Length: 194
Image (cartoon, rainbow, N blue to C red; front, side):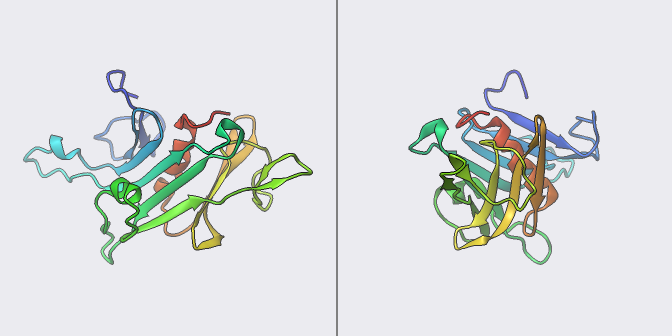
């Protein structure tokens, strides 16, 4: 994160220790708003305000995540919405500003997901989700993303399997980069800590 910046910015690279934006290993970044409730995922393109005449590609927004508090505060499950742009046949994102579309409830040209609501289990005394054995420890960071009208088809699931170990499973339409960036946002979110 940039010390002069009041928001969290995570540079995501494919090479360990290679944190140069000019590197071929630079994939993109995850940027949070000031309070850590909204996140934007960008590819490795340049900020539009920094593009020179050298022909550098303008960055594209590849996803957005919004966390909202629930009525139970930190004792209950977090509410999460995430969206990624739908792609044209040539691989270009159809939606330009994914976060704005998500917040305006305009789901044209984006794939809109919510965290699957966990159910209360009296035997365990906690909210639970079925991770089919892939997640083995309770955590407020555990989540499954589904489309609201298709809650049996999990597009992304993430959860704790050890003290400092997590597992992530994802499928189309998410790319590995998008899935990783969405899960990374769960560590920064100030809505709930674990």
